[in-house]
Image (cartoon, rainbow, N blue to C red):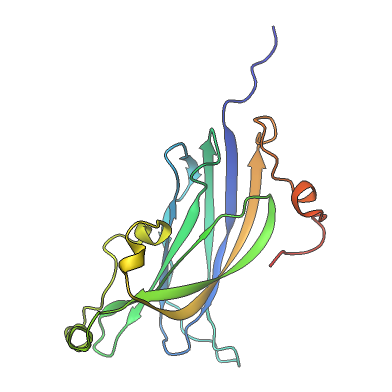
Length: 201
């Protein structure tokens, strides 16, 4: 009797939320969560996390270094809804209130390998000067009630935002049984590169 083939494939992601550049701010922390399609399910690891508070380094870069680990495994039957990681960065304002300093999202890389990604961050803005002043004075800046909206397109076109800072992520991606289910994500077939050529940008 022949053994049945796999019915799902696995996507294993580990790495870290490495560092951030927010020239105007200090003492920031980061939250992350994964957003994925209906056919995806986490099988191991953590889907979300919150880092420690980091202060700017004393060197020329003035980077905020978290080195906060990511480790999660997903299973799925098809690649639709491929996982994205959503980042939210928070820090104190002049009154000591925790306010959002940036949102950003990026897809987990499709091919197995080691990747470094720098994500541009943004914050929602008030629509009028009066609202800006009121939100600053009350310590309640505009923010999303659910950060996962950052990974979706619906309603985003009516949101006023401002770019602010960058966060660098390091991904190590491993897949299992994708080829057996008819999906080819190998770097040789797509890009013509060998895996030993270093970390892709």
